[in-house]
Length: 489
Image (cartoon, rainbow, N blue to C red; front, side):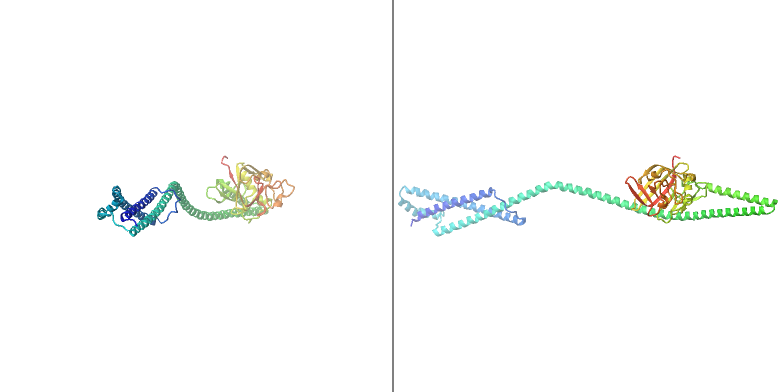
């Protein structure tokens, strides 16, 4: 065994080497903490509260380790000072000889040095336990430093993720604001549209109410017109009966006069009756002359009016805005397969389907200042119109020849094919075709070879109008023909 002072010297040197090694390890760990190496970042923890707690705990542990490090460093420096002092003693005594050094070290100086508590006595077991304890402390410190290193890298990765999210938010925020502005504009437009729709709905309700009131008024006016029409018919019937009675009385009187002996009283009576008849005729003509020539002279709402187009008897016609309706079909309730005289005088009722009469058409248009408008509806519900600024019908002697010019509308100029044609009926064929067009199509019209237009044919079969723009026939379900004087006449 070595002497006690030599063993102590060797233990101190071993302790110095071990502390130097531990101090180097601590310094390296500290440098690693201060400037961590670039390593791949672990997956960031989603539990931020737990992460904050770990950071706080780690900061506390780091502070405790720093304090322990300072304490160990101070203690180590103290041990170095003691070791240097011992080495000086050894070096001073080596000159006098090793035996004296050993004696001096084993002497009172060592004991006094130990008593001064500069060096504590430490056996091998105590030194081994101290060394093991220091090794465990360094291992724990290394482990804590490793955990701190991992936590530090997690914090760095979390900060990078937060910065990335902030950058994305900064980039996306203007776009979000633009989208929000667009949505606000769209909402404002929608609100304005809704308000407009509400106004339209309110106006529509008001219009419906007004239409309802107008319909009720028209119904009242229609009832009134019907009453007036009945009164006029009754008056005309009374006048006709009175004329017939007066004519029969005059005829009987003449017969009696011829068969009896002429005397002065009979002659006076005959003269009186002739004067009464002339007076009646003047009164009748005066009443007829006061009637309007056409609907253009009618002042009043739409309805049935008594007009006098020519020298014949007055007729009933449907008037609307100055237009005189001359033909109307909508359900096939009236048979239009009529003879020449019926088409000349007219048939049907002005309140329903009818034909006003070719003689009346001549009287209405003989001034060559009349325009014609034809309104149609096909079987598909589409509306068509044809307007002619010039329209006239010749008299009986010229076969009621048609003249039309200056077309406008969306139905195509189908009447041009039959312009300047005479009127034909089932009993009077005046067309220029080799066939009997009126007989084939069962209706009176201005046929040529035979037709491009025919609104008087058999209903559901012969109401047609040719649209040359589409090269197709229009299947007509409703038709109305009306005339009116031009404004410049």
